[in-house]
Amino acid sequence: MDPNRSTLPFREFSHRISLVFMLTLAAALLLLGRAETYVFDRARQVVTDLAAPLLEIASRPVAATRHIIERTDEYAYVFDENERLRAENARLLAWKEEAQKLQAKLARYEALLNVQIDPAINYASGRVVSDSGGPFVDTVLVNVGAEKGAKSGQAVVDTDGLIGRIVSTGPKASRVLLLTDLNSRVPVVIEPAHYKAVLAGDNTNWPKLEYLASQSAISPGDRVVTSGDGGLIPPGLPVGLVIQTSSGELRVQTFSDRGRLDFVRVLQYEFPSKVKRQDPPEVLGGPVEGEAAEADAAAPPVSAAQAARE
Amino acid sequence: MTVMPFAMGLACVLLAFVPFGRIFGSALTPAFPLMAIYYWAVVKPEMFPPVAVLAVGLMFDLLSGGAIGLWALVYVVTYAVVISQRMLLVNAPFSAFWIGFLATAVFAGFLAWVIVSVIHGIFVPPSSVVRHMAVTVAVFPIFAMLFGRIQTRVLQGG
Image (cartoon, rainbow over all chains, first blue to last red; front, side, top):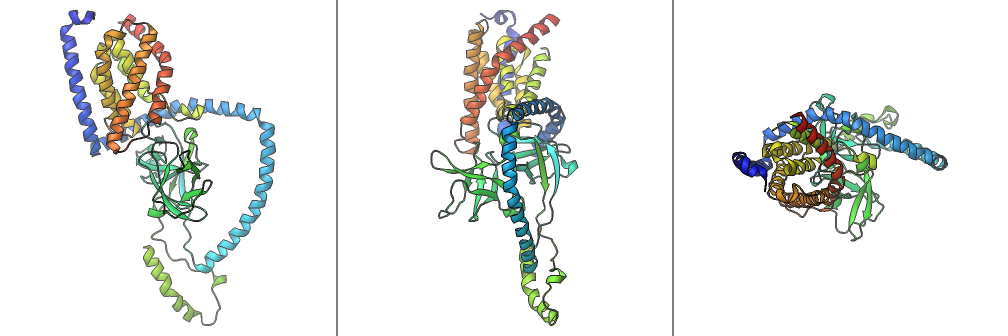
């Protein structure tokens, strides 16, 4: 028998009582927490901001270890890698030329059509300092907070593509909801046919495509990019590739590697709803004679389009 | 009650968020707080009272960004169950202690999965929680040894 039982009956009893009390309290917290009250949000921010510097320090040796392992791997394959990069470089140079031609062409078309060009997006760089820590949430902390201009809703990308969006910010750290989280929903477009869908995380490694039109013909290997619908996340950010699971379901393999998140950028994108109309450059301004009449004729549709945007 | 086990519990919460997964390229870190709770529930429950368990769980919830009270409730219930079965484990050999932890991890994982599924109203894919608990059980001996060292040091100090 437990020696404590005979020697310390009172302590045993109080332990029991406190256990029952804590059980009730925990259950009450679970119910209260569902209401997402201000107190919990505030507590969360305070705890997160306090823990972020500690986690940042703790994540340094991890990053260093990872760096050493990567380096060792790189040394082992340095010749193969060099060969591969040469071939890729040759291929990319051809693409570069193509891209430059297309860029020039596109700029001309945009000028001709008087397209509202997206303003340049500012960003703040930071590091992922924590892991999700639990099996049911896929969020990470980044050391970019409100002091650096981070706001709830902003998109977060790494070198490979979109990783998620910010859901809460403290002064020094923010929480990023990853694409794979149960609560993550991101409007996307599936190229090349431009089918729209919503990328929905479900706590697996491969998010689902929801609200996809039934007749849309997408196939594994198609590229998925953000659509910009809703105005929260800028359009055209690379997200991933369509894959087919063994059960025949179409899901998305994200470009960013969930297990290797390190440096990220928080995009401070603002939906261009209040952008002034851009006039075409002088050189493309059309024939000189009768310009006033033509400008009058062109004005109504442009202003209507602008009104629709606003 | 000494504060050492509680401090260890809190340290375990922080440890659970350190991105170790980055080294191996996988995202899941073990449930470090569960190890501390199980260890002290069996070895010396007076040193780790229920309020400490609740505090550790709540701290985890606040840091994880999930449902508030989820892990607080899971840990307190698991603690209560472990305390009720303590007699089986308290003087048992290490293998039995480890198997006891396996059962505890299965219980805690299942309970958490049920609660999350109820909250979201769908069957959450259980693969991530299974992996999470498997990793936890696998690394438990290392931490049990570490806690044992700390425990003897605290007792000697006392």
